[in-house]
Length: 270
Image (cartoon, rainbow, N blue to C red):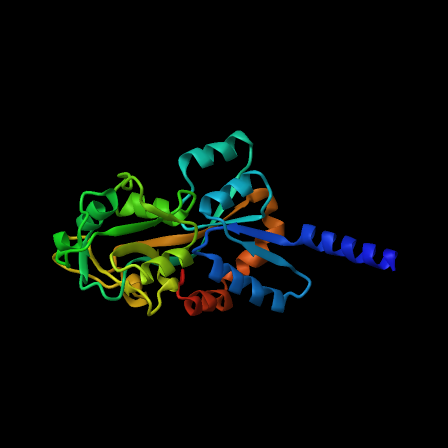
């Protein structure tokens, strides 16, 4: 009996060691999990293990070679690229899908439209009450992802134009935590990937032209280019590991893989 148990443990260890590991962006979790599940149905001899932790965590794990693929909701930073170069490791980037980043509030909030400048004011602390942007006399409670999140970085770069978030901003470890908090907090505001939208929160229409046009985040507006807050969702892997991951990458970019992108709620690359 002991020999049988030991054999099972060794088999499990070998299987885990041989499995493709994907780690990083929480935004990409539902996509990667679904892609992996369907891929393994077609390739029963292959194992793919998907975990979150944030884009920064995924990229750090790739540098340390504790994951095979880093999933990221932002482009790799300059200092991250330097670390790979210093280690003599070449990296391949694959765009798996695109995502519209939705600004969300409590459903009871009467504010429907915000300009990029107003969003910058809210998240940097210059605007602190909803009455300053046409809402009721209520304190604004901004929520953000934690600093290791690619969504945090993308919002800072593209919406706040590289300005710092307000001190003491409510920092959440995952997208689900932001949705839950905002759905329960009347004065709250935050941001999530479009695929996470549900009826417990409300999406703000955003203007990037000083208030001339406001656009609602949706698959349609993201695809036709009218919604301004759109980003690529990326996979990174070490070029030396291409033989191990290429089959999965090809599946993600195939018609079947891109169908999953649409079903999850993201935008296809084709």
